[in-house]
Image 1 (spheres, each protein chain N blue to C red):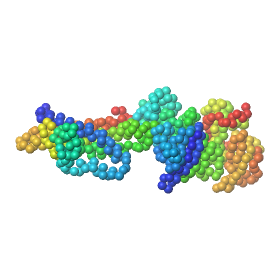
Image 2: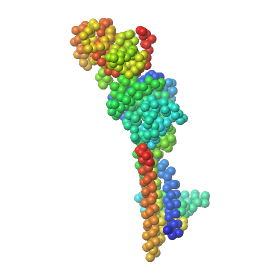
Image 3: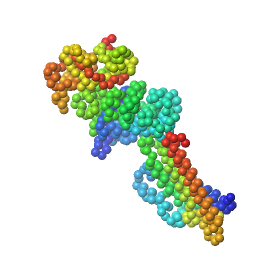
Image 4: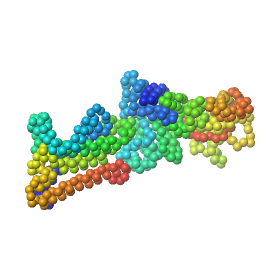
Amino acid sequence: MLTPLEWEALQLSLKVAGVAVGASLVPGIALAWVLARHTFPGKSLLDGLIHLPLVLPPVVVGYLLLLAFGRQGVIGQWLARFDIGLPFTWQGAALAGGVMAFPLMVRAIRLSLEAVDVRLEAAARTLGATRARVFVTITLPLALPGVLTGMMLSFARALSEFGATMTFASNIPGETRTLPLALYSVIQSPGREAAAARLCLISIAVAMLSLLVSEWLARRSRRRMEGRDV
Amino acid sequence: MFELDVTRVQGEFTLEVDLRLASRGVTALFGPSGSGKTTLLRLIAGLDRPDRGRIALEGYVLCDTATCRFVPVHRRRLGIVFQEARLFPHYSVRGNLCYGMRDEDPAAVARISGLLGIDHLLTRMPNTLSGGEARRVAIGRALLSSPRLLLLDEPLTGLDGARKQELLEYLAALVRDIDIPVIFVSHDPQELLAVADDLVLLEKGQVLAHGALNEVLARPELMSRLGGFDISAMLAARCHRHDVRRQLSELRLSDGQMLELPTLDIEPGQWLKIQVRARDVAIALEPVSGTSIRNTLKATITACQPLDDMASVTLVMLDAGQQTLRALISTASCEALGLAPGMTVQALIRAVSLARPAAAPALADQEVP
């Protein structure tokens, strides 16, 4: 059904976006929790920094990543000691996608954490639960629909990432050529409208599917909370 | 003994409380909203820190600003039932009940849920429960965390009459069964009369009065403060027998005097506390005949005092078998009858407003058989 090249781009896209979401989940929850439950000096600055990729041109983010993670970059030099190079690799594409998608994830999780009734947490504390246990057994399960929404949004965003990936990880077939980059390559040469249309349809199908799955998961977890049968 | 000696300033409001509460029985914390009930409760729970002071339960110091000791909330082992049930929506009723238990103990869950009448709800989710059921689960959850103290913060607020009465009955049964101190926060006099042994009256962050329920209710200077409370007396009596034909229950006071009440659902031999409102008591100099009032007690006047805010009414304190009874009569009748301390009179009891099972009083030893 799919040509080997399309298959390659699809698999790569799913891998890149999946790793991007997986790697940003824990820091995303941690930052969302810090922003939702604490006030400290510099909170607005941190909030702004997290949101920056949302408002910056993706190319700028890609270029900044290149500066930081490139061979001469501060982090790049450090990583080179462990023989890790991110630019022009699929891991680099995942990093670019993850950074671009991070604000969406933090926003969704933060909103759902803010909606969790702190009185329930206080009640759990009076029942002998430590803060950690309260977070794991009360706060996180109650915020789960928001966490799922955040994961879906950032997955879709990472999947569709183009500018930052192009700048930081380049467009290497089989390594960093995800669906959007493959589509871009196809429309560069004339007479390949059919191939472009196919890639378009694949992108739409994947996006729709992830949307539906996350919607189903979120509804399921909400239902369970409302005590209806799942 | 539960020692509370705390000060906390919140903006314009200052809470300053120094109390010693009994180790057993129910202490009611009564006061209008804004009197500091919730502030005090949060200090006890450890959700807030006092600016100064010490809280100790049976010698175990929960908080002492002098030694910088502060036991965190989760290690205090206090069972707290909040105004709203605060059940965890993603846990079943059983999950909620077990949340605070250290070890799974199905027998304890079965016992407490039986006591609270929630055993048929264990697999349900909290959102499907009625308000009264949710409160009962919350109380069960607090009890199953094996607390050293049970704190109930207006647990009946927001329930309709029938549900309230139902839960009140569960509560009254419960507090007789458990042997930890219970603090019951409320602004509803009827709730307190149904369950409380002691009363703490809070106003503007200060303790206005603290003592046995009966004793505090009797203080005329507190009458306006007590708002909804009518001046009344709580008498201890023992159920003697039921008269099925006339549908009456005979009660005997400790000095052998008898009262008749519409049939009570109680075993003969069981002790009761009955509430007699001062305005339901009339006074006659001699035993009267030809009256519809069935209950008459022989009593000795101990004091007559006109009320501060209503001089046309006089509160007469009576002693009936070492229990205090109060009568509210017009000052004019008091003068016409020439009532004075030391006189023996007949107290005519028009109605008994409430009767509830109680533990045998200490004076039971002196009982006349």
